[in-house]
Image (cartoon, helix red, strand yellow):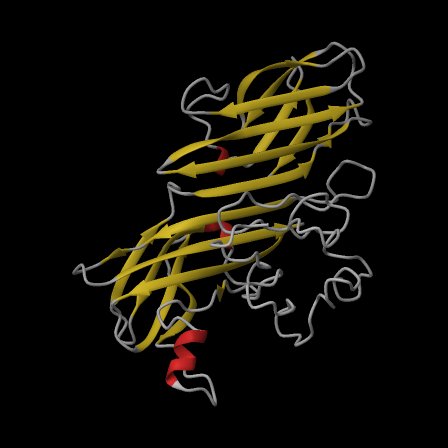
Length: 333
């Protein structure tokens, strides 16, 4: 679990915590009105209709997708979650990606206002979900619009709007309202389905008169975390080969560190292949006596095995090929 000063984990885009906070209330699925947990002595929470528990028990460990063996989210500062795997297979059921970016906005004029946020994106089998959390200071009351520009174009797309202050909670006093909601910290804004959250290149916040107050550039990434895991696809020459490719990367102050790993089996024994990233050959790797392959390549400030030209946040393809250029294994992120 996260520390006492870290927000509880959330389902991406839901705005509702999975774990209870200090108030002891039962966690709820967003919009359901029904608690997930029935109490410390009750059965584990379940995904609606699945019959499978989210949590693995009440021992205080992070919540988990049934069969995944890993936490959904450990909080905004933790690593992204691993994908669900078929029980006992050790392999992911499908491609899974999770991205968390800390967004530092720059005010277009003056220094009396500020804004920052966290962009979260999750993709499972090509279905994307995302949300943007914001915190602002110094903004006058009003309605504000958040827009984004994707990698593929320069036309801004409206992400959503937020109000300053947050509308008063019905039936509460001003003091009660302030205790329940920070008027300068709007709830998470869901990323619309028309926008791929993984392809957002920049963000902007405008006032009701369409004046741009803040801008933020997300490329190159300054602070964030990325996790991806996908099955390896075998080539026609070795159709029985199988395995998994994984990327885990972290960026802090513009410095990226992380690992690219490949695990495969069903290959010819003691055979040397070349692996490539984004179409560029990197190095050779040799299978073991049982036809297994294990590759661990690192991106580090010093001593990394990946060249400086490789940025783990922008890896789209990894391939393993033989001396004739025949693709033995491939992975797409």
